[in-house]
Length: 182
Picture: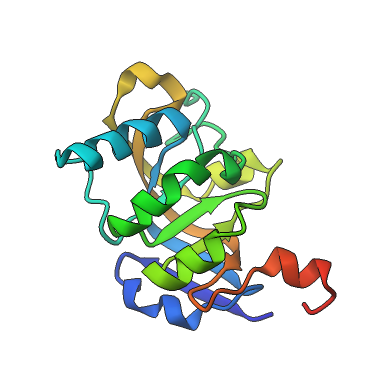
């Protein structure tokens, strides 16, 4: 296991330097989107309509921040179960999304999708939503305010600690740990 840094989107061409099991301090811009937002994004892509943000080279965090306390940039923001977005991952990767951030295992096919489209899946630690909020330096609503906490937001994060689960080489850290190879 190696610790690496990623400055997004500047380091979009460095995803091939990440390997399953690596620790990553992620800085830069990410978008929050959960189930309902993904459904809307994919429908727009299918219809050939513009999306509320550029999908190409995007990093998407499967999260919805809690209400923002006075004087803070963001409320607590913990990852949701990534498998809930499995139905949308291929369309999003095909459209150019490069980084998925969430928690838990995803569909087995994600290994091949990451390899095919050059994307990675990074895991955030569940249960430390307040800690993750401390990494958020700026936040703005981008789309679908009607979704409440699940609306799409653009976050500027600094040194968000993540673990590479699926890399561009088709490796899956969860499987490697279960098989005793990690």
